[in-house]
Length: 269
Image (cartoon, rainbow, N blue to C red; front, side, top):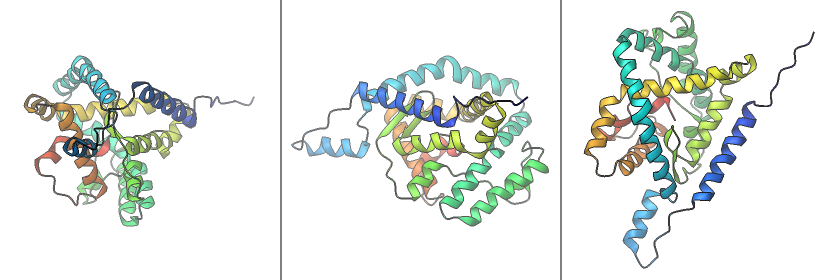
């Protein structure tokens, strides 16, 4: 008997459904009003922020903060409390290892074959000698990890970042990075393999686990920043942009202390 797979909820379908939903929400909320030319200072601040959807973004930001307070932060604290450091490191290594194929692809799309060979070498070494990535054997052998994503690739290709966006649960982004995230999420080799096996739930589990790992690693940093910022929303917006520029330039920029804010966001969103 021939088994017929149902691909009605495959990657392309998810992509267009989510994209249409997001665009609809943006259109319904409208844009922040652009200051008049007669107020050059307000106009300059508006253009520097590049945040025409600010009312919508702040509403999503408020939802994300409530979600973090109620679910994500407590879960991250429990994960730290009951998960021994060695176990947490192994889980982080495992998750990072299965991001190497998408980094490999983006390295080559950006014209960086040497970095691409580093990524694929790490994946092969850690998937075998590192027990599917639980051990970071490649780093122990001097082959250091780096990350690339389609948002960075689009930037290297000369595509502008577009307006700033705050995504539900996922947090800071922009039009370019959101598009890149969708391509990463649905079309990286591991996601396609999981889809072929019918293990779509594992794909979403990977994303959730990456978010949990990031939140646990930044419990103190984000807590201190939220308490010291007069406008936490604007602070995160600035920090996100600087970090993305840092990543796009492969660490060529000196961001000082603000880079520490998202010291682990290289793997995420």
